[in-house]
Length: 136
Image (cartoon, rainbow, N blue to C red):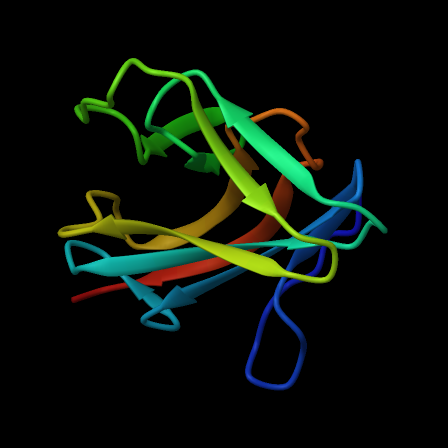
C-alpha cells in the first residue's frame, strides 16, 4: 500500500492490488467542516483482462475519517443501500469512478486520517492519507 498526502503539487493518494489501482480525489480542497463534499474514488483495471467487481449491495465504496484510532465519520452511516448483488465490469486499461457525495461534512475542523475502501471483490488495498478539515 502506497500512502501519499495530497496537495496542489503532488499526485492524489493511491493504492494498488489484485489488478486494480485506486485513486482518491475530493472537493473542496481543503475540506470544510459542515460544508458539502464530493469524494471521487477512481478504480482502474491495471491487469491484462477484464475484471468484474462484485458487491453484495448497492454500496460500492466506503470512506471514513479517523482521529487517532477513533472513527469520527463514516460515509455510509445513516444511508440505505439496495440488497442485491451487483457487478461492475471494468475492461483492461479502463477506469470507473465511484462518487461519494456528502451534503454536510459533520466533523470538527482539524487533521484526520482518511481511509477509502472498495466494497467489492476483488478489492484493492484501502487508500489512506491525512487531510485537513477547515472551518466554515
